[in-house]
Image: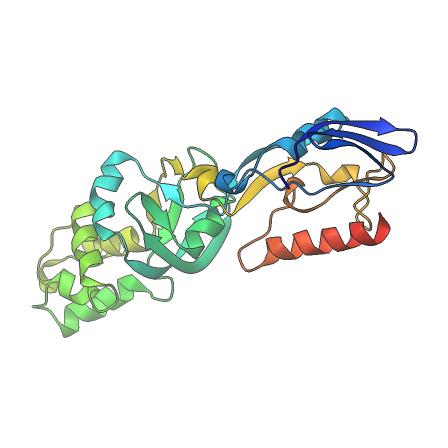
Length: 267
């Protein structure tokens, strides 16, 4: 609409808006400005500024459902795997997601990574299980008896893409040799490296690629039935501007639609 909102003030009959296209007065005002994700689409902190103007608490915001970036020493090795995806489980802050992960030229992405990013905070370690469906130590021990002359890389390639096996054996500093040459403790350690990979991300790709914004206007200020402010009659907040964040799978869209519906029915 190319209409800029300059000021919003409470009025005896509702709310008075001063805009780049004139002045308007309304009985009900619905704030549906979204969060900070994907600024190229017009995301801005405008909704948070309105909330603060009317004395509402805004929970600190950060990017969520977003890919991780890696420290240089990790990226230099793992960037070679860009485009490779595997089923894996990502764990952080006592929360676990068992879905796919994708190696990128910047770091890690894929559903499991996007999901766990909503629970991750700077400095946290993410534990990645690259074979969540398998007892790898048991399988390696079995392979040692069944395929004693096979290289470790050959055995691991039964479950992983060969390019992934080659890079991770080097990354984990594993000596690639025939299975018969490994001791039980060594097989345990190898299994642990693939099943309990401890990775500390450098950060995230930020709002540029984040699917949602974590944090926002505190929901305690609003009726859960109508989304109307408890302190300011006729003022409604809906959607991502509020401190509501869902998982992947359409939950955030559903929140936007549902909160918009109940506000629209009441306004």
